[in-house]
Length: 524
Image (cartoon, rainbow, N blue to C red):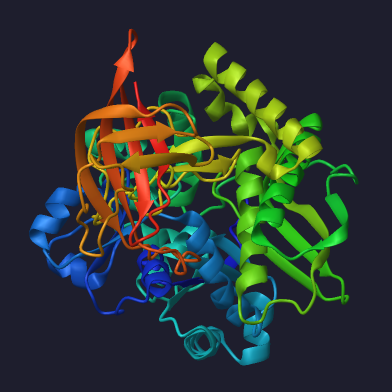
């Protein structure tokens, strides 16, 4: 049985909340929580004081803390804003590995000899992160990543060889760390009366392997203070690394995201051909000016193609958006597997693969190939988002990008009431809207029509009598990049039709003497 390496783990408490608050510019001490699928995934210390906790529904959380700041879960944001923290640690220690946004691990043995002891190293890194990244953190040192992570949550320096003793009295729930997905195993162990890590570790490994799910074997090793997986005792093929060189340097996040998908699939396929999977991934970037950036990501579970692409995208976003970003664009990316396991480690995922999942995977690969031929924006999917008008509420998301609404839950003053138009033309269609005496209908700055519309002629066609109308709804544009747009009003009208029935339209006009009426949508 292999001994676990001695590691220092630096942990930024409640990092998703810290990153969301920094991105939104909200006060650091304010009670806040990050939600995914309407449940709390992380909350601040002040929110916990009001009774807010992980897994709580949004309604329950807000009832306990009415002043709770609500943020949406965004892994890309968390990873991008964590790059300055990782860079601050890397400035003092070598071999930095990002476990996940909020946690980095550093091998201890070499650094402590240079800095004069583990306590001195821990204090130095805490001060360095606070000075360079402006973030509070805690440090723990122990044998193995699992024990060191729990030590960091308690600011403990566990003596060498004492990891199992340190872990023994801790709750069995500690096995279910974010991203590990051991909730079902923890519930099973609790029902069997195994409520501490020590009680679970006391079981014989052969009994665990024979009577529990496969995931329990790795968890049992962690509870005993061991490495999660035994070392892979085979010679590795020399061609596992994947390198891509770019004629046009990468400078934008969308370019990096497209490249990440392609490299992730190539990297995963190369390992799979040799029956391997990656658990530690080194991402190396070389810029046009010759600068080289390296970051290592440690993964609790073997990386899939999608997980590999996510980490490449996160890291590139961090490099391209931080204050100490490279002085030139990226001309070469290399993915290097620093730790691999046998491909059977991925078998836990195969139980959910059926005909539908297989068809979805083939369709996804086909769409990625189309993007490779035509560009990342050639394949898009629609997403219903926030906005006042029908055209504003639909965003087209490039295939593979996260489908997250930006502002669907805002109040949107002047928003068009339901039902929404069923047909929205790709560009506004001109219309002539006249009152009963033949004058163009105008809308005042106060949002009032001068006279009710009497007839409407669409795109030079014959005028049709208006038999009903509603509105206007006035909109004062305040969206980024549209501040020069003039205020406008929307009006719903029902026109007298032919044998096919009446015609319902959504009209739009600029406020003032030159209304410029257009058809923005139609109702079937």
